[in-house]
Image: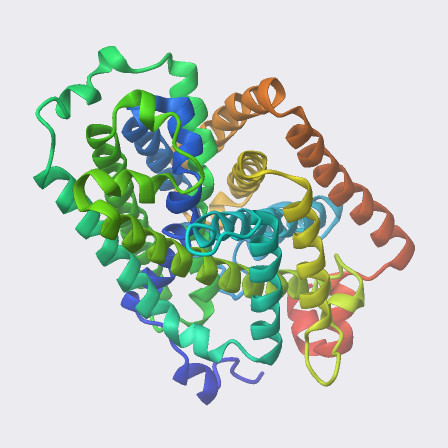
Length: 446
């Protein structure tokens, strides 16, 4: 059998630093810049604690992803993990389709976040900015995202440096009563704290993107776990410090009133108007690159699902000699979410969607733990914590934005309904496709 690691693949091997950049860049994207104000209105002075809780949940999930990625290294990442955990059928296909929709929702979140910061420079309606950035990066992906891909590592460095500058300036210029604002006496009730943690989980979900690069890692057995744990640790520290800086520098009544560009507003006390602009520029870079990267990644996920038989061949069909038809379909669905739902609803739906996906991966992992050699308790703990945050978040969504619950439920129902009908009427399964394209691999898969 031909060695799948061709010379071209070897040239594209990803080292530890590059893998860390993928994880850090995927997490410190739109999350911290877009939803900080939304979470602050819920968690208040306990904002750092909400981020810490989110970090624990992300860390537990990373353990399972590390074990699965070492055992099944592929470009499919979580798509592959779900197929391995639940088999090639309606369950895994539906969950993967729902995962695809979750990425679409996250793109809508990033685009809405971009719009909020762009409006501080040029006053246009937020929907205009949001639609515009989606269309712009759809065009870039169509023409070729090589330039943006090469710039991703630079963008990661820039936004991390800007956040470090913000943290340093905030603590250097700390007001006399600043630390008292972190006192537990000022915290809201535990339900609000955990609701905030659930809402901000979309800011942690990006570490899973590292597993999509496992097949191109020179030493995935060693470097994949390090990249996963390292990226979650780095981002957790930055998030908690940023949240602490915001709480200690901004009075609670002002903090709860901050809008979509909350982090830029919070930079004013320590860095003035220049700080506001600096954070706004970092936010535009982050949200723009997040739209670009996630649009590219979600299109590839749809392509992989179609190859597995879970989506129509439209998603893996060439248009004008290129695999872009799925790109246009993905962009179109993103625009629907952008135009229908506000930022807070999109953030809730995105976090809830990924909590479902990560819980599903953990539950599926328990069925194949003998193959990965992972310990049982972190996997079970990951499933329990993800489902617990999901329950709290759903309660918040029902009481504050019922339309977002309807949207999430409809997305989940469509995923399972479509997959159930499609597989039974089309019969297009992974094994059948593999038998047509690679009979030798199909024989091994049996």
